[in-house]
Image 1 (tube, one colour):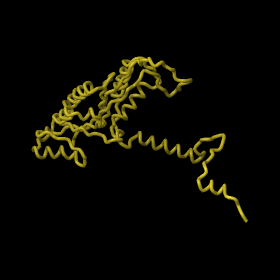
Image 2 (cartoon, one colour; image 1 turned 45 degrees about the vertical axis):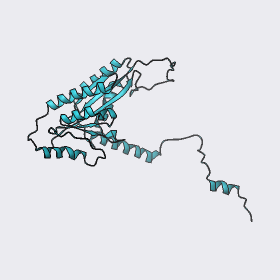
Image 3 (tube, rainbow, N blue to C red; image 1 turned 30 degrees about the vertical axis):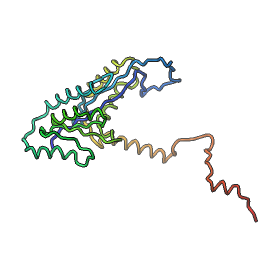
Image 4 (cartoon, rainbow, N blue to C red; image 1 turned 90 degrees about the horizontal axis):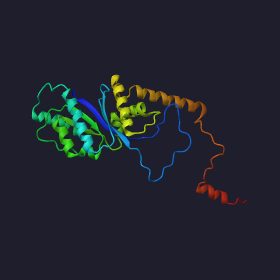
Length: 254
């Protein structure tokens, strides 16, 4: 249908603490703090991801209420829409409404579409949080030609922005020890700028899926050669069933 697809998500909170790296592991016990201990603060990452070309738009924040998230989404989506080509043909109102309603087929709860709908221009994959379903935000989406597609309960993995957030988290924080939320935000935004210089488009069943398949095959091959690799010093005692207990208490008679 020639529609642009973007995904959005919020990652975090990320704490000011040491993060594991590939070349080191923590030793000893975690430091204990008194109950009056106050953390240095946390940071979150607002993300808009374009799977077709891999471009990402991010903003680091220390808190993420609707008063912070909604203006950022509107600002970024307005810029994205400005860069999209205008619809080639103007559809009749009935045909245009049908084009909108086809995306809500099969849903138990359908949104109330306004009577006057603009041409459909963008699909936005977004989590089904209550703040993402506020009437003011949804009506703004509709007025701009955007359909919000909410991921189902337990299906947040369908939001491709989450996959990219995990990549940015590894690049920004692995092996690091941030001391302030501002430092975390700076590292995330730097990682996003580096990613955008050579972005990778998202493909279902692409290279990452192939790597997971190869890794699973290697594990299965090792298990076939040497078992699970687990060992214990003492055998694990299995509890007797009721029938086994009854048999052990019965006397053998001749």
